[in-house]
Amino acid sequence: MSEKILLIEDDVEMQTLIGDYLQNYDFEVIAYAKPKEALAHLQTNPNHYKVIILDLMLPQMDGFDVCQKIREMSNAHIIISSARGEMSDKILGYGLGADDYLAKPYEPRELVLKINSFLRRETKAHHKVGDFEINESKMEISMEGYVLELTKIEFDILHLFLINTNKVFSREVIFNALNTISYNAKDRTVDMHISNIRNKINDDSKNPKYIKSVWGVGYKFIG
Image 1: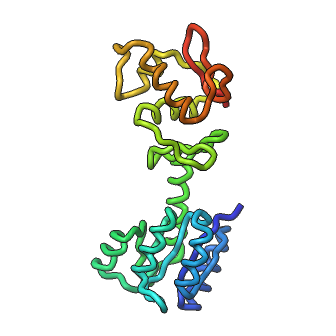
Image 2 (image 1 turned 45 degrees about the horizontal axis):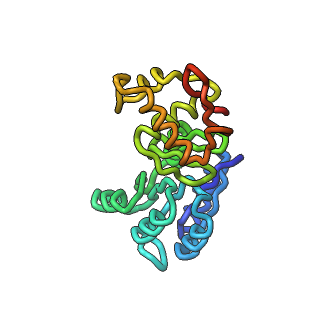
Image 3 (image 1 turned 30 degrees about the vertical axis):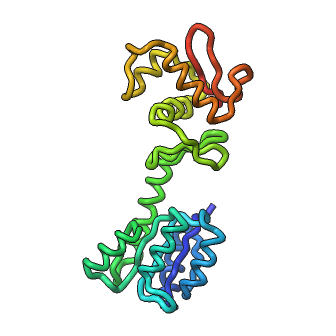
């Protein structure tokens, strides 16, 4: 499935050039010339795009204001594409939430390389396991779309389970996998953290859907 990219560019010639070039690399480009229309669209589709390409010299609004508005409603990777190439503009852009800055004129291939580089990093940082999604860059785990409120130790344990589904872990192995505690603690310490995780993912210990106790050994996550 093609990755969708939002392009905000009022220069029709440049909009066509970028759009056509990206489509050659199997990207689906949704383009807007007016930033207010683009922001209205994004507001109703905040998670629709992973990459947004933004010109700075726009009608209706200053491009930096648009950048700030985008960042307030979306975690998309913002690439500023602008003829304003001064260092002060780049510093301001990054400060308002931009992730990359390309000063025009530039080779369209460079834009493709930046997009692909980000998408590769994002793929490595995100893992979906059943009802759960791991965002390693943010150290977050979501369940059915909702971010779980986990402590550092709870995150580490659940992360260990999710990337090793159906594998049995002893309490000792779980302890050794964590940097924050040592195996000198009593066995019930890990049991306490497992219990807290179960409560947060609504997993019944008597009839578990996710974390199963393995008698005499430890635990395994059912994948």
